[in-house]
Length: 242
Image 1 (cartoon, one colour):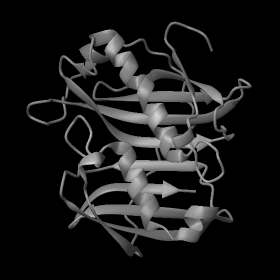
Image 2: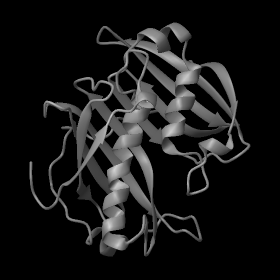
Image 3: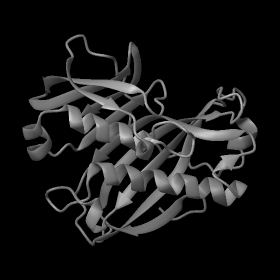
Image 4: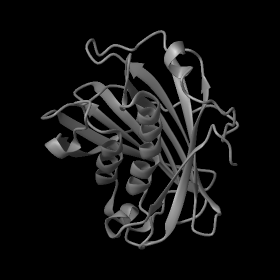
């Protein structure tokens, strides 16, 4: 896939990107995936902030096909794939050093006004600035993540300064880090999650107390964990790992 609509960036797995198997961790994976989208916005508008506001992430959908090892070079290809005038779908493909497809990912974004902090309802003129490549990576839409009824709350967390991003709220990858703290240690140490789905519902801010719990299910013979992150009765994010 080589065309003007696709942005390609190259990286290398650093020492602090590794998991306990010396492979690219899921947390580092998400950090690398979100980078090229900001790069493309800066190329178009000269900043990560567009004339109407900043892009805010609503959903992650990630499927790992192959592992990427420490010190291995890899490249990420990304493109805006679909929009309805309100939200935009951005897709990603990660290729390993052998040029094998290692990860596919899809994200959903909305534009938020910097002053009012409200969703911008008409973004057609902003989206028109981006090259669009109509290639989808998943046959169906984002999974409908709901708060499970049988949640075991195992972890409380106070939002720290290092969790906050340039938009003043908890960074989207930090929710995955917080979710990992809630699941049992033996699961964290021994289970290699290859599918990551995240739904962001309400922003969390510095100093807020988060209540985190999980539900374990067996789906198609495999373990699946749904982690809910809440502030009081408000759901901030739902993370599903399988």
